[in-house]
Length: 127
Image (cartoon, rainbow, N blue to C red; front, side, top):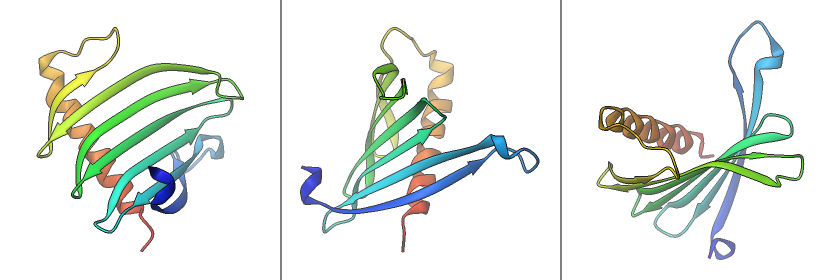
């Protein structure tokens, strides 16, 4: 139950280019903690009337699950590109991408990208 956990929030601005300010993307990163540490991170990136969400779940400080999706509509009425990734001992063990299949050659790339995303979020945690 996330309501019973300690919470923290960070507003982060991603900048793709140092030249054009229109490349700025805002992301709100929410942290949920228990006595052991972070148990959930939710990154909500907004593009305008669309965006993407990454929800990462941790057990004993290790990533165990990632749920990602894109949303659209100014009231977030549309959801697409849902994906679920399951981890054990920092290894991707299962993924569900809806209709999309992932080639085994891309498996390690996806694993690496998700672990990098996790490390990025953890680094943003306010000290």
